[in-house]
Image (cartoon, rainbow, N blue to C red; front, side, top):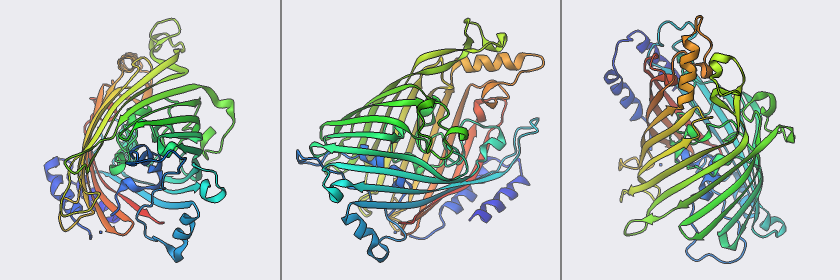
Length: 496
Protein backbone atom coordinates (compact mmCIF):
# COMPACT_ATOMS: atom_id res chain seq x y z
CA UNK A 1 0.00 0.00 0.00
CA UNK A 2 2.77 2.43 0.86
CA UNK A 3 4.47 1.67 -2.46
CA UNK A 4 1.20 2.52 -4.24
CA UNK A 5 1.02 5.97 -2.69
CA UNK A 6 4.71 6.62 -3.33
CA UNK A 7 4.25 5.86 -7.03
CA UNK A 8 1.19 8.11 -7.24
CA UNK A 9 2.99 10.95 -5.47
CA UNK A 10 5.95 10.58 -7.84
CA UNK A 11 3.57 10.75 -10.80
CA UNK A 12 2.10 14.04 -9.60
CA UNK A 13 5.51 15.55 -9.03
CA UNK A 14 5.95 15.35 -12.80
CA UNK A 15 2.65 17.24 -13.36
CA UNK A 16 2.53 20.11 -10.85
CA UNK A 17 -0.13 22.05 -12.79
CA UNK A 18 -2.89 19.45 -12.44
CA UNK A 19 -5.87 20.80 -10.58
CA UNK A 20 -7.77 19.05 -7.81
CA UNK A 21 -10.30 17.74 -10.38
CA UNK A 22 -7.54 15.61 -11.84
CA UNK A 23 -6.92 14.04 -8.44
CA UNK A 24 -10.47 12.90 -7.83
CA UNK A 25 -10.46 9.80 -10.10
CA UNK A 26 -7.23 8.52 -8.52
CA UNK A 27 -8.55 9.02 -4.99
CA UNK A 28 -11.86 7.38 -5.93
CA UNK A 29 -10.11 4.28 -7.31
CA UNK A 30 -8.07 3.93 -4.10
CA UNK A 31 -11.18 4.37 -1.97
CA UNK A 32 -13.19 1.64 -3.68
CA UNK A 33 -10.64 -1.16 -3.44
CA UNK A 34 -10.84 -3.79 -0.70
CA UNK A 35 -12.87 -6.72 0.64
CA UNK A 36 -15.78 -7.05 3.13
CA UNK A 37 -17.24 -7.74 7.51
CA UNK A 38 -17.33 -4.62 12.13
CA UNK A 39 -14.65 -2.43 13.36
CA UNK A 40 -13.98 1.24 12.65
CA UNK A 41 -11.25 3.54 13.90
CA UNK A 42 -13.40 4.65 16.85
CA UNK A 43 -12.90 1.24 18.46
CA UNK A 44 -9.21 1.58 19.35
CA UNK A 45 -7.96 1.07 22.88
CA UNK A 46 -7.49 4.75 23.77
CA UNK A 47 -11.22 5.36 23.27
CA UNK A 48 -12.33 3.62 26.47
CA UNK A 49 -12.57 6.81 28.54
CA UNK A 50 -14.49 8.59 25.76
CA UNK A 51 -16.88 5.65 25.39
CA UNK A 52 -17.68 5.73 29.11
CA UNK A 53 -18.64 9.41 28.81
CA UNK A 54 -20.77 8.69 25.75
CA UNK A 55 -22.75 5.80 27.27
CA UNK A 56 -26.11 6.70 28.89
CA UNK A 57 -27.36 5.05 32.05
CA UNK A 58 -29.14 1.72 31.90
CA UNK A 59 -32.95 1.92 31.77
CA UNK A 60 -33.26 0.67 35.35
CA UNK A 61 -29.94 1.15 37.18
CA UNK A 62 -29.42 -0.28 40.62
CA UNK A 63 -28.28 1.72 43.62
CA UNK A 64 -25.20 -0.43 44.18
CA UNK A 65 -21.60 0.25 43.09
CA UNK A 66 -20.92 -1.24 39.68
CA UNK A 67 -17.98 -1.43 37.29
CA UNK A 68 -19.16 -0.55 33.75
CA UNK A 69 -18.27 -3.29 31.27
CA UNK A 70 -14.96 -2.84 29.48
CA UNK A 71 -15.12 -2.45 25.72
CA UNK A 72 -14.21 -5.49 23.63
CA UNK A 73 -13.34 -4.37 20.11
CA UNK A 74 -13.29 -6.77 17.21
CA UNK A 75 -9.74 -8.20 16.97
CA UNK A 76 -7.57 -10.36 14.76
CA UNK A 77 -6.98 -12.71 17.70
CA UNK A 78 -10.44 -12.55 19.22
CA UNK A 79 -9.89 -15.20 21.90
CA UNK A 80 -6.51 -16.93 21.46
CA UNK A 81 -6.56 -20.29 23.25
CA UNK A 82 -9.50 -18.93 25.29
CA UNK A 83 -7.14 -16.44 27.00
CA UNK A 84 -9.29 -13.33 26.45
CA UNK A 85 -12.42 -14.95 27.84
CA UNK A 86 -10.53 -16.46 30.76
CA UNK A 87 -9.07 -13.06 31.71
CA UNK A 88 -12.29 -11.12 31.31
CA UNK A 89 -14.33 -13.52 33.43
CA UNK A 90 -11.75 -12.75 36.15
CA UNK A 91 -12.02 -8.98 35.69
CA UNK A 92 -8.99 -8.33 33.46
CA UNK A 93 -9.26 -6.75 29.99
CA UNK A 94 -6.10 -6.50 27.92
CA UNK A 95 -6.21 -4.93 24.45
CA UNK A 96 -3.50 -4.06 21.95
CA UNK A 97 -3.68 -2.31 18.60
CA UNK A 98 -1.45 -0.76 15.97
CA UNK A 99 -2.38 2.43 14.13
CA UNK A 100 -0.34 3.62 11.16
CA UNK A 101 -0.70 6.83 9.15
CA UNK A 102 1.03 7.69 5.88
CA UNK A 103 0.79 10.95 3.91
CA UNK A 104 2.47 12.19 0.73
CA UNK A 105 2.31 15.69 -0.75
CA UNK A 106 0.99 15.77 -4.31
CA UNK A 107 1.68 19.48 -4.77
CA UNK A 108 4.96 21.38 -4.68
CA UNK A 109 5.80 23.69 -1.75
CA UNK A 110 5.67 27.47 -2.03
CA UNK A 111 8.81 28.75 -3.83
CA UNK A 112 11.31 30.92 -2.00
CA UNK A 113 11.61 28.82 1.14
CA UNK A 114 14.74 26.64 0.98
CA UNK A 115 13.65 24.56 3.99
CA UNK A 116 10.39 23.45 2.39
CA UNK A 117 10.23 20.33 0.25
CA UNK A 118 7.75 17.97 -1.33
CA UNK A 119 7.87 14.65 0.46
CA UNK A 120 6.04 11.95 2.35
CA UNK A 121 6.04 10.58 5.87
CA UNK A 122 4.87 7.69 7.97
CA UNK A 123 3.91 7.68 11.65
CA UNK A 124 2.40 5.09 13.91
CA UNK A 125 1.90 3.70 17.35
CA UNK A 126 1.20 0.53 19.28
CA UNK A 127 -1.30 0.88 22.14
CA UNK A 128 -1.58 -1.51 25.06
CA UNK A 129 -4.43 -1.02 27.51
CA UNK A 130 -4.99 -2.86 30.79
CA UNK A 131 -8.33 -2.53 32.60
CA UNK A 132 -8.87 -4.35 35.90
CA UNK A 133 -12.18 -4.87 37.70
CA UNK A 134 -11.12 -5.10 41.34
CA UNK A 135 -14.60 -6.12 42.42
CA UNK A 136 -14.08 -9.47 40.70
CA UNK A 137 -10.54 -9.86 42.02
CA UNK A 138 -10.73 -8.79 45.67
CA UNK A 139 -14.35 -7.77 46.12
CA UNK A 140 -13.74 -4.00 46.04
CA UNK A 141 -17.17 -3.03 44.76
CA UNK A 142 -17.39 -0.52 41.91
CA UNK A 143 -13.63 0.02 41.66
CA UNK A 144 -11.55 -0.38 38.51
CA UNK A 145 -8.14 0.75 37.31
CA UNK A 146 -7.18 1.82 33.81
CA UNK A 147 -3.62 1.86 32.48
CA UNK A 148 -2.58 2.71 28.94
CA UNK A 149 0.86 2.51 27.33
CA UNK A 150 1.87 3.56 23.85
CA UNK A 151 4.90 3.13 21.62
CA UNK A 152 5.32 5.77 18.88
CA UNK A 153 7.42 6.12 15.77
CA UNK A 154 7.78 8.21 12.61
CA UNK A 155 7.21 11.83 11.61
CA UNK A 156 4.64 13.98 9.75
CA UNK A 157 4.71 15.48 6.25
CA UNK A 158 2.91 18.81 6.76
CA UNK A 159 5.98 20.49 8.27
CA UNK A 160 7.92 19.82 5.09
CA UNK A 161 5.43 22.13 3.35
CA UNK A 162 5.61 24.90 5.97
CA UNK A 163 2.58 24.03 8.12
CA UNK A 164 3.02 23.70 11.89
CA UNK A 165 -0.65 24.05 12.85
CA UNK A 166 -2.10 20.59 12.14
CA UNK A 167 -0.24 17.35 11.55
CA UNK A 168 -1.26 15.43 8.45
CA UNK A 169 -0.61 12.31 10.57
CA UNK A 170 -2.28 12.75 13.96
CA UNK A 171 -0.23 9.95 15.54
CA UNK A 172 2.95 12.05 15.35
CA UNK A 173 4.14 13.90 18.46
CA UNK A 174 3.29 13.92 22.13
CA UNK A 175 6.45 12.21 23.34
CA UNK A 176 8.41 11.58 20.17
CA UNK A 177 9.83 8.28 19.02
CA UNK A 178 9.77 6.20 22.17
CA UNK A 179 9.49 2.49 22.92
CA UNK A 180 7.28 2.82 26.03
CA UNK A 181 5.28 5.89 27.03
CA UNK A 182 2.83 5.85 29.95
CA UNK A 183 -0.34 7.66 28.93
CA UNK A 184 -2.72 7.07 31.86
CA UNK A 185 -2.78 5.17 35.14
CA UNK A 186 -5.75 5.90 37.37
CA UNK A 187 -8.45 4.42 39.55
CA UNK A 188 -12.18 4.87 39.04
CA UNK A 189 -15.01 4.25 41.50
CA UNK A 190 -18.52 3.98 40.04
CA UNK A 191 -21.41 4.36 42.49
CA UNK A 192 -25.21 4.19 42.49
CA UNK A 193 -25.47 1.92 39.46
CA UNK A 194 -23.41 4.26 37.30
CA UNK A 195 -24.96 7.55 38.40
CA UNK A 196 -21.67 8.76 39.93
CA UNK A 197 -18.12 8.16 38.73
CA UNK A 198 -15.02 9.37 40.58
CA UNK A 199 -11.55 9.06 39.06
CA UNK A 200 -8.08 10.08 40.18
CA UNK A 201 -4.45 9.48 39.22
CA UNK A 202 -2.52 10.09 36.01
CA UNK A 203 -5.28 11.26 33.69
CA UNK A 204 -5.61 12.74 30.20
CA UNK A 205 -8.08 15.59 30.50
CA UNK A 206 -9.21 15.75 26.87
CA UNK A 207 -10.00 12.03 26.79
CA UNK A 208 -13.16 12.90 28.74
CA UNK A 209 -13.81 16.63 28.24
CA UNK A 210 -14.62 17.94 24.75
CA UNK A 211 -14.17 14.31 23.69
CA UNK A 212 -15.72 11.93 21.19
CA UNK A 213 -14.74 8.49 19.97
CA UNK A 214 -15.90 9.62 16.51
CA UNK A 215 -13.11 12.17 15.97
CA UNK A 216 -10.50 9.60 14.99
CA UNK A 217 -12.53 8.29 12.12
CA UNK A 218 -10.26 10.84 10.46
CA UNK A 219 -6.50 11.32 10.28
CA UNK A 220 -5.61 15.03 10.35
CA UNK A 221 -4.63 16.39 13.75
CA UNK A 222 -6.91 19.41 13.36
CA UNK A 223 -9.77 17.00 14.13
CA UNK A 224 -8.56 13.52 15.12
CA UNK A 225 -8.08 13.05 18.84
CA UNK A 226 -10.05 16.24 19.51
CA UNK A 227 -10.36 19.56 17.68
CA UNK A 228 -6.89 21.08 17.95
CA UNK A 229 -8.08 24.35 19.50
CA UNK A 230 -9.31 22.37 22.52
CA UNK A 231 -5.68 21.88 23.60
CA UNK A 232 -4.35 25.24 22.45
CA UNK A 233 -3.10 25.98 25.96
CA UNK A 234 0.31 24.53 26.90
CA UNK A 235 -1.03 22.87 30.08
CA UNK A 236 -4.07 21.01 28.71
CA UNK A 237 -3.36 17.31 28.40
CA UNK A 238 -4.46 15.28 25.43
CA UNK A 239 -3.49 11.76 24.43
CA UNK A 240 -0.71 10.65 24.85
CA UNK A 241 0.13 13.13 27.64
CA UNK A 242 -1.08 12.60 31.18
CA UNK A 243 -0.96 14.59 34.42
CA UNK A 244 -2.15 14.28 38.00
CA UNK A 245 -5.84 14.95 38.25
CA UNK A 246 -9.21 14.26 39.85
CA UNK A 247 -12.57 14.05 38.06
CA UNK A 248 -16.20 13.56 39.18
CA UNK A 249 -19.05 12.76 36.80
CA UNK A 250 -22.70 12.58 37.79
CA UNK A 251 -25.75 11.49 35.78
CA UNK A 252 -28.86 13.23 37.14
CA UNK A 253 -30.98 11.45 34.52
CA UNK A 254 -30.54 8.63 32.05
CA UNK A 255 -29.55 10.90 29.15
CA UNK A 256 -27.74 13.76 30.90
CA UNK A 257 -24.46 14.17 32.75
CA UNK A 258 -22.38 16.84 34.38
CA UNK A 259 -18.69 16.43 35.07
CA UNK A 260 -15.97 18.56 36.61
CA UNK A 261 -12.35 18.07 37.53
CA UNK A 262 -9.15 19.53 38.86
CA UNK A 263 -5.92 18.81 36.99
CA UNK A 264 -2.46 19.96 38.05
CA UNK A 265 -0.81 22.02 35.32
CA UNK A 266 2.71 20.82 34.54
CA UNK A 267 5.42 22.49 32.48
CA UNK A 268 6.59 20.64 29.39
CA UNK A 269 3.90 17.96 29.23
CA UNK A 270 4.73 17.36 25.54
CA UNK A 271 8.48 17.93 25.84
CA UNK A 272 10.95 15.08 25.55
CA UNK A 273 13.14 16.52 28.31
CA UNK A 274 10.52 15.91 31.00
CA UNK A 275 7.87 13.58 29.68
CA UNK A 276 9.41 11.39 27.01
CA UNK A 277 8.45 8.19 28.83
CA UNK A 278 5.47 9.53 30.80
CA UNK A 279 6.95 8.19 34.04
CA UNK A 280 8.06 11.60 35.34
CA UNK A 281 5.92 11.85 38.48
CA UNK A 282 7.95 14.60 40.17
CA UNK A 283 5.76 17.47 41.36
CA UNK A 284 8.50 20.02 40.66
CA UNK A 285 6.91 20.75 37.25
CA UNK A 286 3.49 21.63 38.69
CA UNK A 287 2.79 25.36 38.31
CA UNK A 288 -0.99 25.64 38.71
CA UNK A 289 -4.38 24.03 38.19
CA UNK A 290 -6.96 23.48 35.45
CA UNK A 291 -10.63 23.30 36.39
CA UNK A 292 -12.90 22.06 33.56
CA UNK A 293 -16.66 21.59 33.74
CA UNK A 294 -18.98 20.11 31.12
CA UNK A 295 -22.69 19.40 30.78
CA UNK A 296 -23.91 16.81 28.28
CA UNK A 297 -27.19 15.55 26.85
CA UNK A 298 -27.11 12.12 25.18
CA UNK A 299 -30.54 11.39 23.69
CA UNK A 300 -31.69 8.37 21.71
CA UNK A 301 -33.90 9.92 19.04
CA UNK A 302 -36.20 8.46 16.41
CA UNK A 303 -39.40 6.45 16.66
CA UNK A 304 -37.49 3.38 17.79
CA UNK A 305 -35.01 5.37 19.92
CA UNK A 306 -32.04 4.06 17.92
CA UNK A 307 -30.46 7.34 16.81
CA UNK A 308 -27.88 8.32 19.46
CA UNK A 309 -26.74 11.92 19.83
CA UNK A 310 -24.31 13.78 22.04
CA UNK A 311 -24.66 17.48 22.85
CA UNK A 312 -22.14 19.07 25.18
CA UNK A 313 -21.17 22.50 26.42
CA UNK A 314 -18.21 23.19 28.65
CA UNK A 315 -15.31 25.35 29.60
CA UNK A 316 -12.38 25.56 31.94
CA UNK A 317 -10.41 28.03 34.01
CA UNK A 318 -6.63 27.68 33.84
CA UNK A 319 -4.68 29.07 36.79
CA UNK A 320 -1.06 28.89 35.61
CA UNK A 321 1.37 31.35 34.00
CA UNK A 322 0.58 31.87 30.30
CA UNK A 323 2.43 34.46 28.19
CA UNK A 324 0.54 37.20 26.39
CA UNK A 325 0.69 36.86 22.61
CA UNK A 326 1.31 40.59 22.00
CA UNK A 327 2.11 42.72 25.06
CA UNK A 328 5.24 42.76 27.23
CA UNK A 329 5.43 43.32 31.00
CA UNK A 330 5.04 47.10 30.45
CA UNK A 331 2.03 46.86 28.18
CA UNK A 332 3.99 47.46 24.96
CA UNK A 333 4.38 45.12 21.95
CA UNK A 334 7.21 42.75 22.88
CA UNK A 335 8.08 42.39 19.19
CA UNK A 336 9.22 46.05 19.32
CA UNK A 337 10.70 46.27 22.81
CA UNK A 338 12.36 42.85 22.93
CA UNK A 339 11.21 42.49 26.54
CA UNK A 340 9.58 39.45 28.12
CA UNK A 341 5.93 38.86 27.33
CA UNK A 342 3.46 39.65 30.08
CA UNK A 343 2.18 36.64 32.02
CA UNK A 344 -1.48 35.95 32.77
CA UNK A 345 -2.11 33.77 35.79
CA UNK A 346 -5.75 33.22 34.78
CA UNK A 347 -6.94 32.20 31.32
CA UNK A 348 -9.82 30.14 29.92
CA UNK A 349 -11.29 28.10 27.08
CA UNK A 350 -14.85 27.07 26.10
CA UNK A 351 -16.53 24.59 23.76
CA UNK A 352 -19.91 23.57 22.34
CA UNK A 353 -20.08 20.33 20.36
CA UNK A 354 -22.71 18.01 18.93
CA UNK A 355 -22.95 14.76 17.04
CA UNK A 356 -26.18 13.11 16.00
CA UNK A 357 -27.01 10.00 14.02
CA UNK A 358 -29.66 11.01 11.50
CA UNK A 359 -30.57 7.68 9.96
CA UNK A 360 -29.80 4.00 9.94
CA UNK A 361 -29.58 1.63 7.00
CA UNK A 362 -32.19 -1.07 7.50
CA UNK A 363 -30.13 -3.68 5.68
CA UNK A 364 -26.95 -3.15 7.75
CA UNK A 365 -25.75 -3.69 11.34
CA UNK A 366 -26.44 -2.02 14.67
CA UNK A 367 -23.50 0.40 14.30
CA UNK A 368 -24.45 1.61 10.81
CA UNK A 369 -25.93 4.92 9.76
CA UNK A 370 -25.25 8.53 8.89
CA UNK A 371 -23.85 10.69 11.71
CA UNK A 372 -23.16 14.41 11.54
CA UNK A 373 -20.84 16.39 13.81
CA UNK A 374 -20.28 20.09 14.43
CA UNK A 375 -18.82 22.33 17.07
CA UNK A 376 -16.94 25.46 18.06
CA UNK A 377 -14.07 25.97 20.51
CA UNK A 378 -13.33 29.52 21.69
CA UNK A 379 -10.19 30.44 23.64
CA UNK A 380 -8.93 33.45 25.56
CA UNK A 381 -7.63 35.74 22.76
CA UNK A 382 -4.87 37.18 24.99
CA UNK A 383 -2.97 33.92 25.43
CA UNK A 384 -4.09 31.58 22.64
CA UNK A 385 -2.67 30.83 19.23
CA UNK A 386 -6.01 29.56 17.91
CA UNK A 387 -8.60 32.11 18.99
CA UNK A 388 -11.38 29.80 17.84
CA UNK A 389 -12.04 26.72 15.73
CA UNK A 390 -15.23 25.54 14.06
CA UNK A 391 -15.77 22.20 12.38
CA UNK A 392 -18.35 20.14 10.52
CA UNK A 393 -18.12 16.45 9.62
CA UNK A 394 -20.14 13.43 8.62
CA UNK A 395 -19.53 9.69 8.77
CA UNK A 396 -21.77 7.23 6.93
CA UNK A 397 -21.22 3.58 7.75
CA UNK A 398 -22.81 0.74 5.81
CA UNK A 399 -24.33 2.89 3.06
CA UNK A 400 -23.20 0.30 0.48
CA UNK A 401 -25.40 -2.74 1.05
CA UNK A 402 -22.72 -5.24 0.05
CA UNK A 403 -20.13 -3.52 2.33
CA UNK A 404 -21.99 -3.16 5.68
CA UNK A 405 -18.84 -2.46 7.73
CA UNK A 406 -17.23 0.13 5.45
CA UNK A 407 -17.73 3.84 6.04
CA UNK A 408 -17.22 7.12 4.22
CA UNK A 409 -16.26 10.35 5.98
CA UNK A 410 -15.84 14.04 5.23
CA UNK A 411 -14.54 16.67 7.66
CA UNK A 412 -13.74 20.38 7.42
CA UNK A 413 -12.18 22.55 10.11
CA UNK A 414 -11.62 26.31 10.20
CA UNK A 415 -9.15 27.92 12.60
CA UNK A 416 -8.91 31.66 13.30
CA UNK A 417 -5.63 32.90 14.76
CA UNK A 418 -5.75 35.21 17.79
CA UNK A 419 -5.37 38.91 16.82
CA UNK A 420 -2.33 39.40 19.04
CA UNK A 421 -0.46 36.64 17.20
CA UNK A 422 -1.20 38.25 13.83
CA UNK A 423 -0.05 41.68 15.08
CA UNK A 424 3.17 40.18 16.47
CA UNK A 425 3.86 38.43 13.14
CA UNK A 426 3.35 41.70 11.28
CA UNK A 427 5.78 43.58 13.51
CA UNK A 428 8.45 40.86 13.43
CA UNK A 429 8.34 40.46 9.66
CA UNK A 430 8.29 44.21 8.93
CA UNK A 431 11.66 44.81 10.56
CA UNK A 432 14.88 45.09 8.57
CA UNK A 433 16.25 42.51 8.73
CA UNK A 434 13.05 40.60 9.55
CA UNK A 435 12.94 38.95 12.96
CA UNK A 436 12.01 35.30 13.42
CA UNK A 437 8.26 35.19 14.00
CA UNK A 438 6.64 32.80 16.52
CA UNK A 439 5.12 29.47 15.47
CA UNK A 440 7.57 29.05 12.56
CA UNK A 441 5.62 31.71 10.66
CA UNK A 442 7.06 33.01 7.40
CA UNK A 443 4.09 35.32 6.87
CA UNK A 444 1.30 36.90 8.87
CA UNK A 445 -0.91 34.19 10.37
CA UNK A 446 -4.65 34.75 9.98
CA UNK A 447 -6.75 31.65 9.36
CA UNK A 448 -6.54 28.12 7.99
CA UNK A 449 -9.07 25.64 6.62
CA UNK A 450 -8.46 21.90 6.29
CA UNK A 451 -10.63 19.53 4.28
CA UNK A 452 -10.34 15.75 4.62
CA UNK A 453 -12.18 12.79 3.17
CA UNK A 454 -11.59 9.05 3.47
CA UNK A 455 -13.17 5.68 2.94
CA UNK A 456 -12.72 3.05 5.66
CA UNK A 457 -12.35 -0.44 4.23
CA UNK A 458 -13.05 -3.32 6.58
CA UNK A 459 -10.48 -5.76 5.24
CA UNK A 460 -11.03 -8.59 7.69
CA UNK A 461 -11.79 -9.11 11.37
CA UNK A 462 -9.81 -6.50 13.32
CA UNK A 463 -8.22 -4.83 10.28
CA UNK A 464 -9.34 -1.50 8.77
CA UNK A 465 -7.58 0.54 6.07
CA UNK A 466 -8.68 4.01 4.93
CA UNK A 467 -7.29 5.77 1.84
CA UNK A 468 -7.26 9.47 2.73
CA UNK A 469 -7.19 12.84 0.95
CA UNK A 470 -6.42 16.18 2.64
CA UNK A 471 -6.24 19.82 1.49
CA UNK A 472 -4.67 22.65 3.49
CA UNK A 473 -6.05 26.07 2.54
CA UNK A 474 -3.51 28.68 3.73
CA UNK A 475 -1.02 26.29 5.41
CA UNK A 476 0.21 27.49 8.80
CA UNK A 477 -2.65 30.02 8.58
CA UNK A 478 -0.56 32.09 6.14
CA UNK A 479 -1.86 33.65 2.91
CA UNK A 480 1.65 33.73 1.45
CA UNK A 481 1.77 29.90 1.34
CA UNK A 482 -0.11 28.18 -1.46
CA UNK A 483 -2.61 25.42 -0.78
CA UNK A 484 -1.20 21.94 -0.21
CA UNK A 485 -2.75 18.58 -1.05
CA UNK A 486 -1.91 15.22 0.49
CA UNK A 487 -2.92 11.66 -0.22
CA UNK A 488 -2.25 8.80 2.14
CA UNK A 489 -3.87 6.16 4.25
CA UNK A 490 -4.64 5.24 7.81
CA UNK A 491 -4.67 1.65 9.00
CA UNK A 492 -5.55 -0.02 12.25
CA UNK A 493 -4.93 -3.58 13.35
CA UNK A 494 -6.69 -4.54 16.57
CA UNK A 495 -4.40 -7.36 17.68
CA UNK A 496 -6.46 -8.57 20.67
